[in-house]
Every structure is written in C-alpha cells, then in structure tokens.
View (cartoon, rainbow, N blue to C red):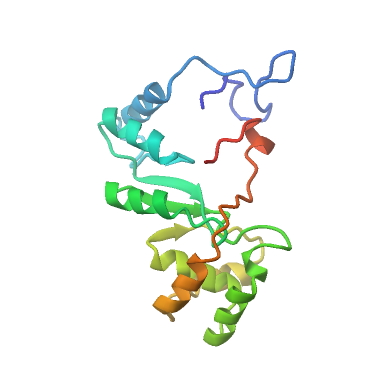
Length: 192
C-alpha cells in the first residue's frame, strides 16, 4: 500500500484525513514494484520482496515483474499453516519468510498439547519444535524475542529432525487462525 509521505524519519505516523482514515498516494502496486526494481538496478539494494501477498496478488506481480520477488513474508504458524500459499511460493521460486511463527498469547501453539508432547520427546522447547517444523517446510522463520536465552534457543534447531508423523500432527493443528490483526497498524485487514 502506498501511503501519503509524512517525512523521514517516520515519526509522525500515517497521515489521516478528517475522518481518521489513512491517506493513500495514487500509486499502484505495479508502480511501487517497478520503483523497487530501479533500486536494484542502481545497486542500492540486492534483493526485493513482498509481504502479505496472497497468491492472486503474487501471480499478478509476476506478470509484470522484471525481477522475481526474493521473498513473500507472511504470518505462518501451526494454527495457520498456509499450505497452498507456501507450496505455490516454492513452486514459483519465491522464498517464504514466516513472521509471528510462534503465535501469540496464552492460547497459542506454544501451549498446544501436541506441540508440547513433541517437544518433550525431543528434549526441546515448543518454540524449537515450531521453528524446526518451519525449517523442514522450507520456510525461513523470524521469531520475535527480547530475551537473549530464547534467541539462542531459537537458533538451536539443527540438531534434530521431526518425523513425518510429527510434521503431519503439527499440520493437522491448522485452524486458519491469524494472530496479527493488521487493522492495528494499517486500519484494514490485509492478511488473507
């Protein structure tokens, strides 16, 4: 989405009209992508990608993109596996980066009995099991933590592997449940 420019640094926030609605610039996704491609051409960035692109928008982008997006950053976790989108991104050569991959709150996948049982079998934390599940699916996980110990734990996922049965158990937890409400940031629900 192209918002009205409010200056750098971005401290003022999004510009809004008299009704509190976000002011958008009249710039299409295609124009935005083409501007990003010029940054690659100028050597200012090495790679460009998208975030929260559903499959139909990604397919549209590929009709005009000179440079294939390096990534599609999406919310993905055991309660929202995004199977079709992830598979199609892989097929199209677009890496998937998963945010909010550990879920959120007290009722998230970290507390799920199935995840906890798998973690116990491997002598790992539930977070490590979820991150490993993502890695085995070819998804780059970007879990959020402010605790150094947890950050270190989140990297320690390459000394074990989940069985096909364990992967299937985690896949079966899918509820198509998003934890990130994009309306909190952008006024609109943009994640599909």
